Length: 428
Image (cartoon, rainbow, N blue to C red):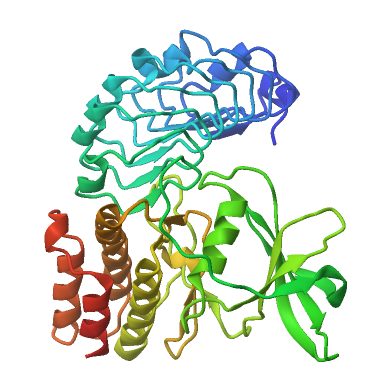
């Protein structure tokens, strides 16, 4: 974090990113001294309720974070910022989104955890829009004009008041990642029985990882027979995430059941002293690593790889395993919603595990489920394309995989293969 004192003393001249979280109640005019350089402005965690009308003076501003503030409406000043493409106002008190508050080159709009009941039809006039994050609001519908946003790829609608998913949304040609749990939609999934594991049987050790929905720790589980198992324990937080409810995530993990390419769930924790919810899972071998990092602000909806190179056999086996896991999930009426390389663990032999059910949701009905599967196939096609781009084999050896990849991402959903067909193609 930067300080207001350093800004006023001129010590931050020429910087491209400014982070200020110091209880601000008003926008400091000193920020305009950075108008010739500032591209990223982070004012999250303050007490701001408005932005200056002349915000456009920050003529290079591309990314604006204003989460955890006191805004009740999206500031109209944003609409005049010509370079602004990322707008993040998570966990404020926003009720009103005026048409004039939307910048012309908007790509990512994050309004998670507000009080929004409706969005303006003018939102559909932003053809660059790729990412729309609206979980945890009060939306009963979406503007039909959004159908014109043909580049829209990621949509988060969890924990709203939607009684159905719009037909146009399920036909969007580029949509690949859709989250919608926690809405009053019908639900056709069947509960999967799961073993209760008393809290007193668990001994927790070091933290393995922490995400928006919970903390994962290595642990020992001493069962009723006295046998000790090395396991991983995930304790869920109660807070809403950008994808949805952690408790909905847990329900999807349980309903997913067992599959060789899913992280095995051994049981559900009971008897926690603070009534926390949690799962006990198999401890994954350290030979597995995460396939990629999540998208950056610039890449928007595309994962970031760290020089990964793949042999053709490794790629094919990994892709077949993930397709098999997705086929299994959709056969159970579960849409993963976040099929990304950063949610996949892999090893050099091509073994793979699909994790992170934070965006998962159950089918509202079979017909909708068929569309949801074809949307998730688009995500798989994008993933397969990323893997092919990192394959050491020549084009003549990857021609069949490339043809399959193109089928998965074609704009007409009905012509895309389902996961059963994809799995068969990859196994062959």
